[in-house]
Image (cartoon, rainbow, N blue to C red; front, side, top):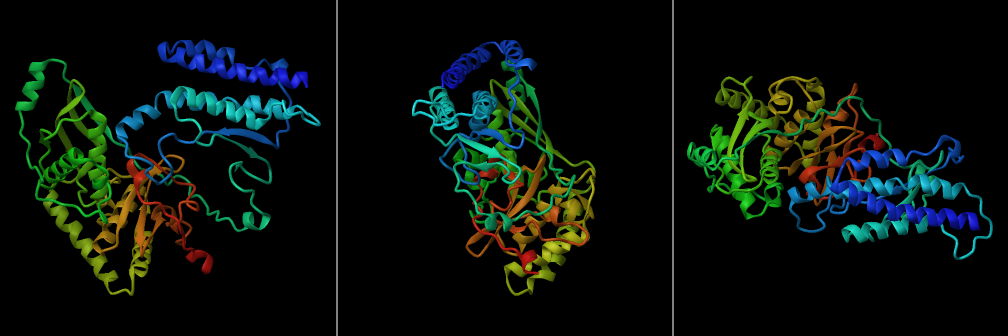
Length: 453
């Protein structure tokens, strides 16, 4: 028992040292290089463990519950916080897995009450998080992976063999996650005179006060506060009127401006000429004072292209309009896109235009085309952006009172499959929501037409 106690106290000592190291790294990042070398285990002291049994410390996201809004927060501030001290804390706590392996490798019989267990280590880690962030006590848990039980969360009830056998496990198409993130070009103006010149060189353009957007069809708009909504309407109106340069009616920081522009793009796939991977912001003292949007130069005549785009959508809508219900309409559009499209990169592949007028696109084109067609059919459908091994886009659709995940890209196989058609969040576990998509409605139920067939 003395050996076990020594290990336990050593682990707790490492936790305390980890806190000091984290704080030191915040002050001077170069310290982290030396700490990394110190933490490398010596080969001759390696503890032999059972490789069929691995332990992990799982740390929940402090600010989000997947797919649900826990409290009203500023998305930009949350992203900054999560990329700073939160990442360091998560890394430090995840490093405890080695200590847990050592603890579990020690065969102890008839443990006394004072002996330290794996759960004690997790509780100590949670205390460290709480001391630094005030956000402990949120379920840091120890997970175990064995040959028969892959990464089972200890906080959940153990599943029976029958439940494991019935778990939904669709295939994963390789190389079909081609969503591109925003890449703003920031022009930093440090001189007040240059900043004033930039402001005076353009006007507000279109304010968009005449526009209103329903909650059911435009969820990203309603995630914003009043200031964000003003800028959203202004960006929408100027894009609709093909005005590329304008002065923001409200001054916000750069991260907030990027989030607002992202909200416009996510809500409006019909603005296909807006190059969502690039735009320019003029920054003075941390505030966006001028915007310059980028339109695809491959589209020479936007009005003519828009007419062609809407005509193609009209034909698809006409083909689906006479179907019995929204489910049949959804299935029709899903299958049409799978039959029509080939997954292939091209200069317009982040737009709905590439999927509706063209025949080649990536996940962004599939998702935006499906979103817009279903919107035109009167079915609330949203673009959802996140990760599926890499950045990826899919959809969330509302049928009746329930919401479902739909991934037309991954269902486009030969022949068409329905592995990712109308899944719950639980069954859509290969996808992880990101950005403000985490605030979209949760998908609690699923329907499996593939299983029925």
